[in-house]
Length: 220
Image (cartoon, rainbow, N blue to C red):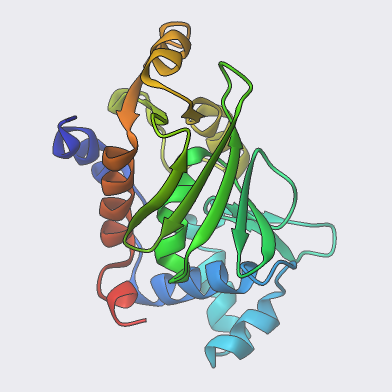
């Protein structure tokens, strides 16, 4: 088993520090995006029962603006690993087709949505399909059963970039791979990466959720 505290400590130190208002808006935005359509800020404000100015203040902050993609109409189409436009990893939530930026997103987002998701992804080494069922409290099913997750060494992580920069420098290195052998073959060609078991990757995802959302997630 990997030393998850050793991996997570520098990640937490560099991670976004959200105040409670930002946590509420961010969690609400994840859940609105899960409906499968772009999200307008006034729509999010109405759902949360707050003023649009409060949503704007949270989303325009340094902490959250770097996580957000907008379309040409200024509606939000992607946030913090979840997207309603096509990306590399498919996430089915309540029959709605969504996408995640990387494999790890598919492990932490179900807890934020408080629902089970079906995941479909392509192994970058073998081009085989990986399928998972991820519940808020764990991975319930996985095919192939030996699937692992590639990850970046803590020193290689860069938090607080724009969403596009995060995808390029982090998400393009975090995949589901069909076996430890496929994982090691792939990581040997990509400096700074290593392999995590699915259980370890999920545990690390839960640690991220707790760090970012704390009591807001527990009471949502």
